[in-house]
Every structure is written in structure tokens, then in C-alpha cells.
Length: 283
Image 1 (tube, rainbow, N blue to C red):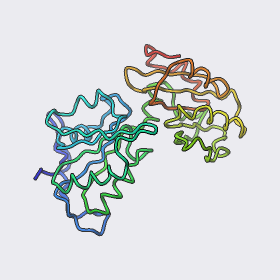
Image 2 (cartoon, one colour; image 1 turned 90 degrees about the vertical axis):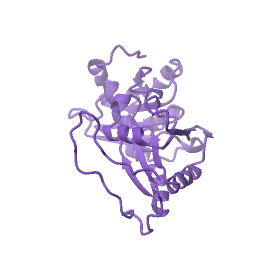
Image 3 (cartoon, rainbow, N blue to C red; image 1 turned 180 degrees about the vertical axis):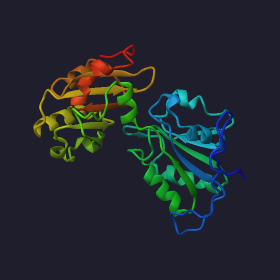
Image 4 (cartoon, rainbow, N blue to C red; image 1 turned 180 degrees about the horizontal axis):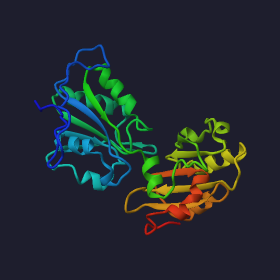
């Protein structure tokens, strides 16, 4: 049986608190009947240097890693060769493994005594289905821990030179899924049309025409600045800037590909002065 995950410091890292010794799972009444455990780990938006130290340590000590397609190749390359790797990524209308089967596989691997890392792009609790997965683990009495990652909104905006909040332009920010099921528009569009607010749509490339149409239709000014960030924080990052009225055409002519993030608000206008990665191609 594998040794449990620990937070033992790496070379040159000052020792912190003693590693946690697991007893029963504190979030379930079921007894801990798993020999192994699962770490739900956020890999961040792509740049491997944005991994947390804890995420890196758990990756290095894992027996099995189940990873999504949004985990960048640079991060995948950090996984030791002796670790079993299972790709469970999802694309639009193409799921390598259905979510319920992923949940059950995590339970099975833990009960077999493995140290399992469930590696997700960004942060597992922000549009990452992390809550669904640990609900299954808790119900099965499997011990687990959660390691947050830098979410795409924070990472991509920072690498695009766009502050999500600013005292002169935005006092609030909203994270919204742009993956509109069956092209429906069942979102509270009127709530999104507010002054001094930044909107961030995850997975918004396919739904971009609908997003722009509905926001304008519900009263947002057509000249509101918009930025689409493709493959943010990576060497292939590309940023397309426009307004609600013209961003769709600009994106169609740019050839950008998923994963993408859509940022809408006056803060986008600051990019022309704050783009600290100006050498990266922009459109």
C-alpha cells in the first residue's frame, strides 16, 4: 500500500507544519474505507511556473494521475515517468470518459491503495466539476484533499495586461460559463448589464455571438470593450481586442482556438498601456 500524501518540503524549502495524519473523512459520516486517497489539484491556466508548490509536490509523489485536456503539455512534462497517467479530458460533444465514470474511477483507485491526483486546468472549484467529484469521494468514505489553482480568469487577464478590477473602472467582477447548452440563452443577462463591473466568460468562443447579441439587447453599450484571450499564459497566447459590436468578426478572422476566455468591461481599455507581455502576438 502506498504511503499517504504529505506536505514534506522539497530541497531548499523551509519546513512548515507537520504533515496531516488522516483519520476519518471529516465531511462524511461514512467510515474511511479506502486504503489510498485522492488529491484534487488545480494546475492553473497553463504556465508551469504558476503551479503551487503543493500541487507540484503532490504530482511528484502520485501513483496515478487523471488529467484533463486543459492541463498544458508543459505541466504534463513535469510528471515523473513512473506515474500512471489517464487522460479523461472533455471537448465539446466529445467526452473521453463520462463524468460519473471519472468519479467512480477515483473511488476505485483510492480503494486499491493508490495515491491519486485528479489534475485539472485552472482551479477545480471554478467551472471544473470539482465539487461533483469530491461529493462522490465523500459519500464513498474516500479521504481526499483539495489544492486550489490559479483560475483562468486571473491568470489570463494578468498575462493579457487587463486588471479585472480597478478603482476607476470596475468594483466587481463576475465569472460566468459561456458554454451555453444547446445554444440556449437562459442566463440572467439583465444582471450582467451593470456599471463598473467586469464580466469574464469561460469557454466563450462558440457562444461569443450569442453573448454579444444578448448583452447589447439587454442594454449594454455596443462600444463596450471586449478581449478574447486564447491559450492564455502559454507561449501560444493570443489576444483579440474589440467591442461588443465588432469582436465576433475580429475573432472569426483571427484563427484563434480554444481554450479561450472572454473579458468584457472598461478595464479591457487599459490593456494598451498595461500589456507587459507585448512581445506575444496580439490581433
